[in-house]
Image (cartoon, rainbow, N blue to C red; front, side):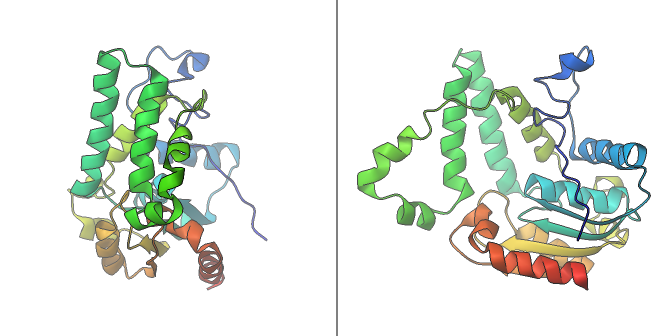
Length: 252
């Protein structure tokens, strides 16, 4: 029914990233932002696909941050926006885990820890905050824990490298759609013309839902609140419900 364009964000190892920028003969890759990701996508849609308007944009997590950035960067380009387990800006709780990961990366690099071992530590940390304590306890039995740990001792992607991840973490850390509005989320909300549907996980430990809830009130957005033990991956645990709600929103 819909013509779907799926976009790789800057810094993910496929689009322009620290791991591949030499291919494009760039001397050095500057830090990237969520707005940079959106601007590059706008150029692709308008200059390559020759589109002047699109019906909808949908994204989850980092993708949700991008579509919310779209809502203020190009307010007349998209009719409907669906953002799930995302946020219009990072909470202080979010900034804590991001800075913790950046500190692990930078300190381990300084002491010569291998990329594989650094990524193993980060993956273990993300496994803990990507779900919930209840989920881990329920799914990982004590007698299976050592085997569970072995899953982290693997070869990690050579396309999406540690440096790519570091660049994206820094982009996420500075994400705030109100930046262009003197820090006023109210002004940012008032600039949005797209209809919004925000899917929020109450148990999300990775992207705290508090800023999204505030934003939903400011924009009178349609919301779906999930309250399961899947944390940041709440949508995957209620995928049929979310699919149906998104379909209804797109039909409205």
